[in-house]
Structure formats: structure tokens, C-alpha cells
Amino acid sequence: MFSVAVVEDDPITLDMITDALETQLDATVYSFTRSKFARDFLLQQTSDSLNLIISDQVMPDYDGLSLLKTCHSSGLNVPFLLITADPNKELVIEARKLQVTGFLAKPLDMTELIQKTQEVAVHKR
Image 1: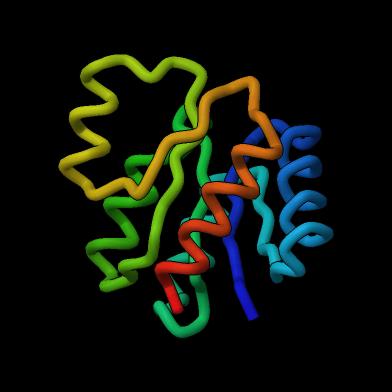
Image 2 (image 1 turned 135 degrees about the vertical axis):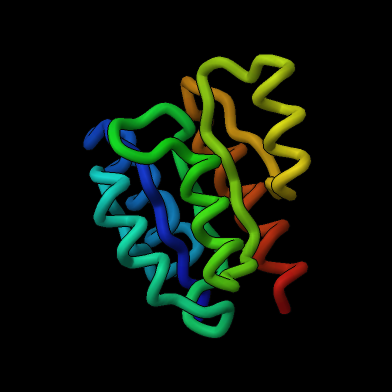
């Protein structure tokens, strides 16, 4: 079973991602529109219980990289895909330092999302 946490503050985008992962990859998806709730959930996970995190960068409370830092500090080291509408140089450099697995550009292409998720799933096995 492949399990994914998705953190996206736009409910429509979150529904699209969740639907694509569940129907095309038969993944178990834990979806969050509030990064605060996602953070609480992530602090309780292990690499055995969660295979991938997909997170938007710009959100209220915690941005994507803050969530990734929280994961690292709690010992949760799973692949992390960052969604961003503005992949500026500073963000890319910081993300690479934090070992972000990959980027997804907004507006999201669901085919690309599925492809990148499958690549992570293959490497995880």
C-alpha cells in the first residue's frame, strides 16, 4: 500500500490531487487544507506509515519548507514533492538544501503529478 500526505490550502486543487492519487495509483491519501493539522499529523508518522508528502509552498500557518523541516527534526525522512507557483532561485536553493525530492509547478498537471509520484513509489520499494 502506498500512502501519501497532501497539504494544499486550496480545496479544489486538493480534491483534484486526492482523486488522481486514489483512482490512478490506488494510494491511501491523507489530505489537509490546513497546514497546522498536517503538521500535527506528520509529527505522528514514520517512514513505515507514510511513503510520500506532497505540499504546497505558500500557505497560512506553515509553508511547505517549514513542514519539511518539522519532518526532518522529528526523524520522518520520506520523499517530499513541493508545489509552487513561483519557483524562484532562492526557494529552489533552500529546497535542495532540505533535500526536496521534486517540484510540481502550478497550475498542476495531473499527468506530471502521477508520473512523479510513481517515480517515488518505485524508488521506495
